[in-house]
Length: 640
Image (cartoon, rainbow, N blue to C red):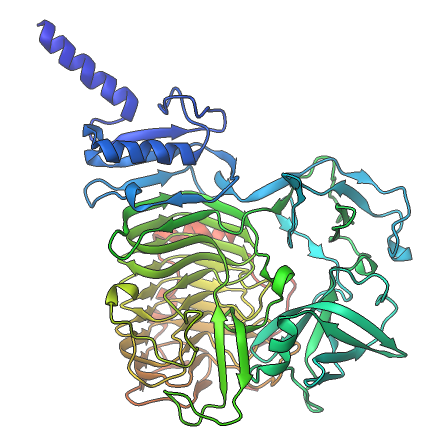
């Protein structure tokens, strides 16, 4: 009898500690302490400590972990001081996964931001402030990290992004007058707000074909009704040397549009802010209804909130996040080195036109480029069976979620991607920094290739809102990817882009699927675009049963007619496109390779296929986060 009582007490103790005799549970609460045991009654304070405890359970192979380890994170905002790093030692198994589980989108939040408090009305003279802004500006001491001022490019008031002070009110932009490639300078119309004595930190945002560039202004020379801008290196050289996309000069459709930002002389409208890095003060003009004494104001500190990385021989396996929100990420490259993207957000490290054409893959190619990859709020590499289920990705400066390389059999489903500065979801290698972008990628070790990943039933809205040339979902050199039943809307360029390399040479890509997605209200600002866009040879790949509609009339497009619903671009080969609904037969097949099949695409596609595209019924709870074309921008309804 005594022995039976001991066994019962041991089982009961195990149940209290783990919540189940079949799985271990570790609890985290905003009211917890990392000195606690991690039970529901004595929760920890941080997910990092919970992950460490889970790692120890794995190391010791404790009996409770046979059914998995569940890190239960209660509702609240958890501000991260450093990225949460998931390592191979944190791996689970098929029967015993490790899951970090919260209470839902917007409820359990891992934040890379810093809260800014102590706002006060400005009652002193601010040199350079426009006269119309006097009496309307509030200020606060900007955050310090250690003994260094925090550098940041975004500010959110009650989770609504504020506008970095700019010379024109969005969406209005001016047009450049000319670009001098030899002197690496630009001539623009002069304006009263362009004060050459207050240009510290000023940037130029320029629209060019299918990409933008962000250039740090080094000097301004006012010349009557015009001004000459020069820029810092390295972006000055790259911007003036690279041939595609270059600044657009056209009497017919207008020169490249631009705006200037981040100068005190531009701070004159509600919702605008400016960070004086010398005085380390933030200035802001509140919007109607905002009370800065009660508002929650946040700026981002971390570029990456979660980093999950293994190696080829020791990947991270069977790990997941469920019902967790990731919020407030930073990206500082534009502030430190400028930003000159090539395409889909991949930024140029070097690029120039060849005097003698020809590369190993293309005898007639006239340009070369090497690119870098933007930072992401959540970065994953060398991992398999990784899951993001019902998670939120919001208020991010660059990419939301990035499956960088060496990923296999992973799933992203039922997630919200909203207010994303760059691409919402990236998957697969594009070009390594050491590989020229036009060379086909096909590694000897096939484990490098992202294979059999699934991106399904996610809502992507208001992505690409800082780098307009990014995309909703971007897939590089991937194999067996399944992109299905997603809804992508309110993006500035392409909805779903798959492929890289501009080559019909057989490469790492094959057997990909883009099916039953709903893409609408896209190309808000950039053309040479489509709802679905492909590059390069992809044997066995299928694009079918998708819905593509409602492309914006981009106000500053280099060519107002150069937009499409489906677009197979250079080198696209061995791809089948069938049963895709769109309101007109407006497609482009540009310099395609062999083996493409086009079958039954356009307005005649069965209404059953049209209506089945997008989120499936169990995931339509995401509709509550959908707000489309709030400022009623015009739509292209025909092929005019």
